Length: 244
Image: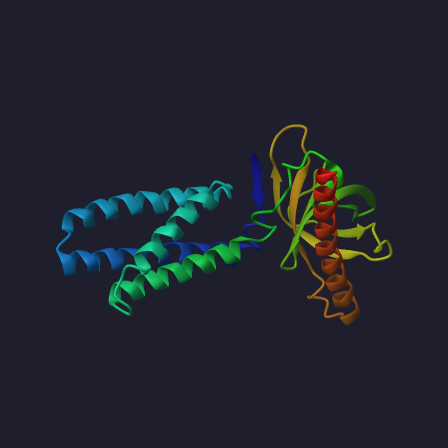
């Protein structure tokens, strides 16, 4: 997989991930250090410190590559923190540390879970009629080409297209269904290509709220509602077909 990010415009986001990531490690380290002092578990403390140091560097490596493998490993870490949290005396120092580590981990997950960093593409759905995407027309400079909007969340989206564009390019996205006279301005913030023969997946940020245009904001909200309804309808049609 080839990946490119607009690191200049996403610098604040990337820095935030670093702070949150190592913030989780810091509070986890404090918790196991306190347990070592309280119960004299210095051998366990040494083993856990070595293990979690390697684990967090491994997670950071997956995060820098924006690998989807990051999420199951993050889930295991979260499960460990919750397990430890519920096995501590309420409001003890170790409880507070595990609580803060869990909170920072949730914040890190929330900021990462956008189409710019981790777009959702329903590649497992072989029947295109039931895929969670919409056909769109993309306008770039004087060119027009078709694409698929595969994800739409938190003022960002993912556009799949075979057209090779650069990071930072400004595009217009024209939906077809019921919104054929509407265009949404967006900027390419990330770019993925999984393999030869598959389209580029562009993580885009919509500028509708930067324009401070009430009409544009209303149309964008309507489009987001339409997107959610379409996903529900496709899922309903799929299960109706399977029952027949």
